[in-house]
Length: 175
Image 1 (cartoon, rainbow, N blue to C red):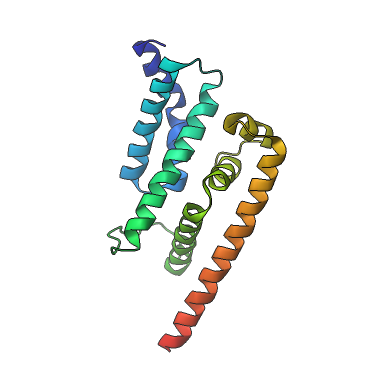
Image 2 (image 1 turned 120 degrees about the vertical axis):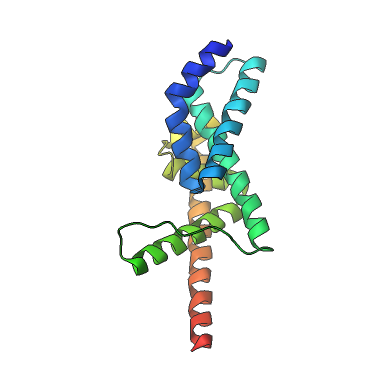
């Protein structure tokens, strides 16, 4: 593809890539980095081989890059305190804090999943791809998509349940 085609591609598929990245990385700077990395990688791939499904490739790359960035942040956050500010909305502050806490726990749990399970989960539930689309994008069988999705959900349930139990224990100890 030529350079001027990529301007059109970014304009056409940019919102899709941004939405994919921002769902996993609700930090503007991280999502912007992921956005750029996605299009750069897609450009490099298109120079080496023919791309048959550009939107699918972009969603897969954005998901992979976002999960990688999420894992990096989680490794760093375990050793450093976070400097992110909670975002203000018109919702009840307690509900907002609980929702933000749950979102953080979910992101951390997704980052701890094996790579294929994380990709399959994100492509299915965040990008809303069908099993068939996921299988085509990841070049795996439809049954492998189902197995990976089942395992991812089971691990996420277990991880979130452990997080809830450990936070309840911490609350009890503080009282």
